[in-house]
Picture (cartoon, rainbow, N blue to C red):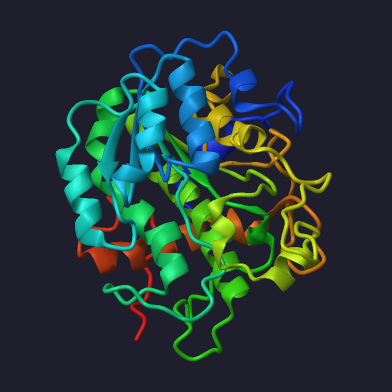
Length: 340
């Protein structure tokens, strides 16, 4: 069961609806919004969705830090955006995450957990023993949020946005074998599991940190051509209708531009419309998604397993045990068994 706090925050809020559409850009989301004095971090913010997110936030006056594995990759963005900060962060390396969090000074008004990996072809484990996609997409951001919790709390009205995807409809988290030690490894199942975990991270933060003035939500960008697709072979891209027989990229009608794809995350990170929303999932159309049963036939929405407070607690405890820190001060949280 979820905590009384979790039940309270859900009961007090109505469904988020906005005047925006699937084609609204991130800049349009923030038209007329002044973010001067607001300090924000965007992980993986040097290209694609991340760069579009950074441009929109900085364009509205925010002080933005790009957290990325290779800071040199953000050189062009630094030239483009005066005052942009860049820092090294490798989400697959918990020591790197600790170093980044330790160097942050002062309040943090928004953390956009945008970085991620998709469809890693073979089973890979990090030094912490986690499957790579679950480690980067969930565990690294969990550790980052935990390390930055004092900075988020000191802001008084901070927001955490976890970028996920519609893949959360395809698989819940297999708590019996999250790292594919016994079951055959499948790149897409692992990716789907990690995207469900991303939503659960937002739910976990929302139900624990509300008293600190911190809200947390998940956003799905939709389909966009980005570096996230680097592990996809030509046949897969062609099956998606996104590549010709000669290897040229195609932009199908259901694909969005990076500026459009960044809109849901920017909405949750900075729009006044989302100031009282927490523990939710906003879809590519910039509206809160309908909760549906997950499975192969679910065309849209957010799977019930991705919003399950007990699953969020369970995953939080597994991650906290890996970090060797207390999992939560909430006495009502569900304790998770330690996996072999």
